[in-house]
Image (cartoon, rainbow, N blue to C red):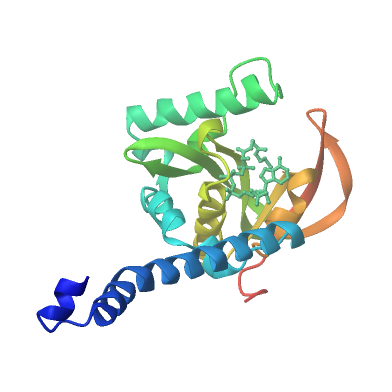
Length: 217
Ligand SMILES: CC(C)(COP(=O)(O)OP(=O)(O)OC[C@H]1O[C@@H](n2cnc3c(N)ncnc32)[C@H](O)[C@@H]1OP(=O)(O)O)[C@@H](O)C(=O)NCCC(=O)NCCS
């Protein structure tokens, strides 16, 4: 380096310059990684993850592919969507949960509104809304909620239930459902409240749940 000194350049200054240019960002990157790892580890250990971590960009990207669930009357469903809804319900309730051994048709579908969650045009989640009478007033019974097995735990079920809640609020009616008991807490997170004791339906423990728009913030 003596030749640098001979031409009047300070080698120490050059080292400092390169140190700031290259080591600075590297140290910053390591710091960010440490914070990220700390959040994951503490979140996993305590069973909770901060909202900003749950909503991190990667999750946004995955969820961005999901269209806002739409609500369609039976006779307005395209042939393709109708077939996809029945195929999905068959896969989940007949194939996976073995609730029925036959195709899942009870003749009520034409009376229902159908909720469709689409991802790039593919039906990945569904449920149906049957008009019923609740305490002498018009209400809606939510049923047949199913999300494609390959797409679970990505917020599709949540998007559907939230869409149903908005629909109930818009219509000013209450909703009821017979929920599988294991999902009670999950539905409760959307403001649905349990009514009465656990009962058996189709060989599975169920609870009746009700949603009253405006009852929760
Ligand atoms: C229930 C169902 C609709 C949820 O859809 P989803 O898109 O996976 O739900 P989301 O991603 O919005 O929410 C996931 C949360 O649902 C809850 N959940 C999902 N399946 C559950 C189960 N079998 N037991 C308990 N909680 C469950 C959990 O809280 C989960 O959160 P986690 O991933 O942090 O544990 C879907 O699992 C499904 O189609 N199941 C089979 C059919 C069924 O049981 N329908 C409901 C009839 S009442």
